Image (tube, rainbow, N blue to C red; front, side):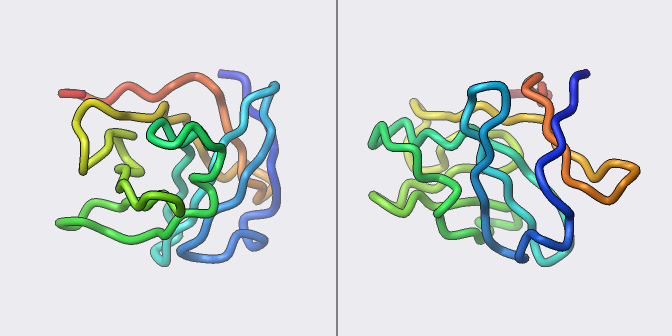
Length: 115
């Protein structure tokens, strides 16, 4: 996998997102209170706007989510599927904290069983 360094882990505020341009792709990166990291495409498929990084981070039935700031469709941070409209989904990317303590993203999409 090809990893791109984004920022220091501590620079990400819990329960919020940031946008990073990775190889020409806008990626929304989220950190939860538990310290878990998630990366999705920043494009909200419902509105067509690049806004998911500004969404409201939360959970639904224990699953970490982000609600689009425009029309409030809720997307799983784990699978990228829209929990309010099963016809919508966003790509989910691999994200990790590297050896230097920086958040790194790979544009290779994660594959989840049953998705």
